[in-house]
Length: 546
Image 1 (cartoon, rainbow, N blue to C red):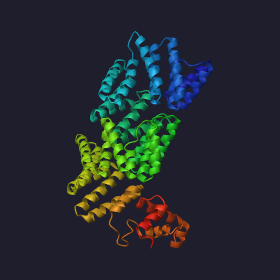
Image 2 (cartoon, one colour; image 1 turned 120 degrees about the horizontal axis):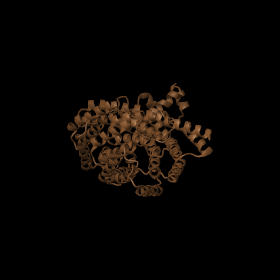
Image 3 (cartoon, helix red, strand yellow; image 1 turned 90 degrees about the vertical axis):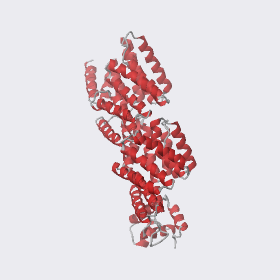
Image 4 (cartoon, rainbow, N blue to C red; image 1 turned 135 degrees about the vertical axis):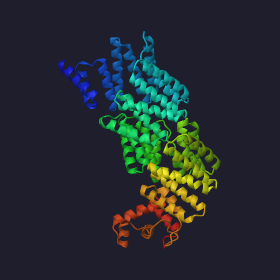
């Protein structure tokens, strides 16, 4: 028994110090030697869930629930039942979660005095309203849960209720209130006042909603904080995958696409290991990078995997259809997604909606969406929202035949994207500025804009966008058919079209095979091609084989 007690003490100490694997081993050993009291069973369940052993954790939490009933602690038994329901809900086991919520509710009803569990059970009910199209009802229920949390000074319940109220406010269009509540909640999290599971829930929800609200500064700040939090718990699986997915999104926005792919794949691995909520972000963010690089088949597979989470991979999938030339399908997808979305998600989809409507030739629909985005930006000081709105508005003005009016708006967007360090969107804006200059008769300025944008796209590895910018540049003096290729790249392309392997081309031009491979890679990027066969076809189609 002494050995079991010593193991329990070591397990409790490890738990308090966030050494989850060590805590698991001590608790498990103590359990096998003589069993665990209900509070330690709760701790063991938490550790199992955090380290990716969700099925084991739910079984252990069930044991804790039953042990509390044996000793007559009905309120604690109800709490375990409520959290069991929440964990099952998060893993998609809705029937089982509903059963546990019903059991928890019955136990609460049997109590002579009210308790904090009554408020805890309001949280999943409010979430059901929130994602079921009733954010106003959800906000009211979260307020009721908050009142119960404050009455019993339950910090976890208070913070989860404030988080939900912030999410509901965001969905109702009250962005400033929502973001203010997120900041308030994060004070409790970063101060270490909350339990580990609510802390992780709040971290990931706040970051995701910050992105949804175009608040790149908050997303960056809280992702860095989540990174530190996860780093202090290196054996934690739950929330670590979501952290990697958020990192992937930031890397993608800031042009570090190799790092974005690496973080996305880490998220995918941690999703498979037990962080079920990382599935969508891990695959969606990789899909977005693959789409921008022109790896369309890989992007489509990533979006298909992301859809397994139950969330629709938009706007990425619609933009992929657009990039593949299937504009009607892109238009159908983005319109349906925007029409079905809550207000916050719809606003997030508006930039893509404008782009696709313009590509489909529906300038009136694009104007309506751009004006909707502008009305949101009018009441916001967020630079990312301002940039997206100016870019959309400028593109619509250009389509409406107003290049002179479009230029200052697009230059404003370009400046904002540069200040935010979002290079792909900055280069897209630079290209639109060039189009506005050309439409105004200023060919020299247009050529400079196209050339600068093309160089940025090349540096990023954005093959389709690079080909777009290249197609807008005027023919080079040395060869009117060469497009964006240098004389050396033109020589290499001609030899590729002649069917020569890299080794033979290297010998023909007195270059190393590595240099030839680099030239071919640059040719593919500049022309938006993906194979030697496509390069050969391009050379013949453009009269470059002579």
